[in-house]
Image 1 (spheres, rainbow, N blue to C red):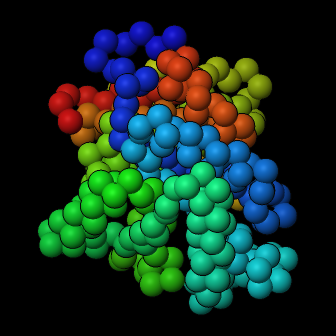
Image 2: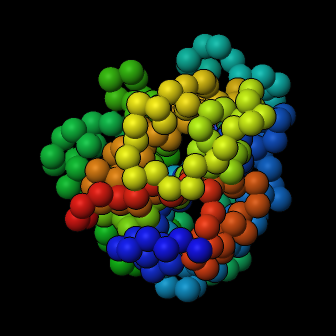
Length: 269
Ligand code: ADP
């Protein structure tokens, strides 16, 4: 049980949940339908419990690849952007249809980094999120890969999810990954690695342990998750990294069970 004063995870109401490519897709790059279906079911139920849910989802290029008949990710950026356009539409189609079974409505939000750098756009995005949440809709967010250039991109969805939690003034950010949480070193190369339950400060030692890249299907590994933790916790938002293999884990989190790694938000929100 998490017993940390002022960090009542159970009562978090506005929640941003980021789900990564390695959770959403099989090794083939195609959508893992079983996981996606379970994920949607649990989120629909959390919504029924009265929580406000915002999803940050990857997977568009993977879904686009299978739709357009590509066996492997192309190297050309233009082709990747085209696949993102094909896949994003298909991905939303999945989310839309699956949530519809539970009478929930989703809305697509595609962001580029200028939204957080331009005051007017920031305000517009904030108001749109707020309006959607008031309408009891589930915003589904992704980077706008089709128009992203280096200057415009967040780079990875871990960082994007942290900015979204700040933008929406969320209580909690949950990053679902292909691993149980943050370890003191990469468990894939170090069998003796130990999971870290709670992080109240992102020290150099922690950063060093997160040094290597993630799975080849994911993008950022733990480094981008630490960046996300820095952005979120600085604004008083708690963050959890947990294993998305079985989306039922989300129930454990809201039952107050110790799950994955908890990064403690600092100060007032
Ligand atoms: P996702 O697609 O879920 O974002 P990634 O593959 O990008 O997943 O990141 C998770 C991977 O990061 C893990 O599978 C693991 O191999 C790697 N990793 C590197 N260092 C660590 C660490 N200290 N603790 C946990 N995982 C680590």
